[in-house]
Image (tube, rainbow, N blue to C red; front, side):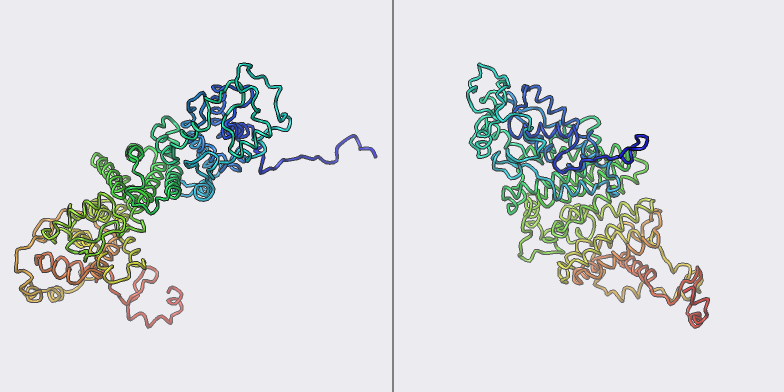
Length: 640
């Protein structure tokens, strides 16, 4: 058979697909060097210095690999980079300076994955593939014997591309070695007997050529030095010393580093069996605690300095920081975490004082507090006991109190009999110290209502409303006494709503304007009648009036929208409904008649905003009661 005109009928192309071979020179070189590091060997014709330079260069080339291969071997690559960061090889008796390049390699790989899989990035900048790696795939190295740690591969394991090539003889005797080497007559590292003994843990040397002596790279020394570094400690330290463009990349993808730190801390507590240890004793290493605090200060400065220049990155950084501190409350001393939260709020407040328009920073702080206060132990974190409104009743305050909270609680309990009950009805300093997180939320609500930005009003009110909504859904707090303790935490809302009276929206205002003056006068209650209703005991003593009372001139504030008004009044009604009746009665007995009148005004706004009216809005027009009989009309029925 002959081909016509010698033309091919079809073409055949082969595309190799493998889950074992990387099929990328850059990844191949990097993984091979990692293999040599794990096996404690030097590649042929390599000295210590040349191998260190080659390893550093291969790390820098990893982010430049083909995207498909990089994604395919992503868990293995990140595991190896993290391993090199905490367990760098010892060359010439000293640790190789590989930690910082390995950390930078992690940052650049994360950046590349974000770019390659941009469709898997959520609105906060988290990549689903990387998030899956942190939660399910990563294998972090932890302190322990080199050959007995489950997170480290054995000498005989690994990919085929990392092992001995088939063209290399088993006992590479043709390789030239120095005749002055005392280990010349020993087994070659590539001999089968040596590999078997290495797997069984019997080898004591690390030697590939005569340029590396056994006493310079012995096994006990490596184990001793490697056991000193933990992943979370090294991540924080390397992040602090990072500079240049890689520092910006680290902040841009901070969520990955924060989640990796939390993952390492959790695994470390599990490995060392410290999950049942009190939190103040889990991470008592002073350098690590100081590094965490320094890192938080660095992040705070980044947020306040670049929130205008890079809004999307700073928004993601702010959210990531909030989730990090949210998770940190479950692992570290909570008093220390409270200090970190206070430092963040202080840094934002200090920056806000120097700005004419602080809308963006205030929204960032509200989002930050919303995330932190979503913690499952939010209620006990606010110490709802030991106050005149929430007595301890002889029960334990907290199963795992922090050092700061324990000292604060003991000092407070000793003087609780001398404490003015009124200090916990308002946003006083004593209230904010006892109920830290609630104090921050309510303080921001009060500040937000003084601004002229509707977005800030809505965000601040929604944070409080959502917290109360979650309390109602929480099965742990269905008991009436628990609800009363919860309501005691939010008592200052009553004063905040009273101060916001001029801002509240009144849907029935237009209707009342058309009513007769005689009807308005008939609806009012005279001052003497109010005294008779309340009783003489209400005004028996001298009382303190809220700021912004009826006798004081009220500052002009921005009015609230109807939606914000209703949400704020819902919070007010929730507190009134769930608070202890005895506590409310005792408090109101001490209030001035003007303040009581203001509370009645707030209740009137509640009726005006939530009153059921038998009317329907149809196509922008109002359908009143008498029009309901006309619903049989086809046009009206369609509109409804």
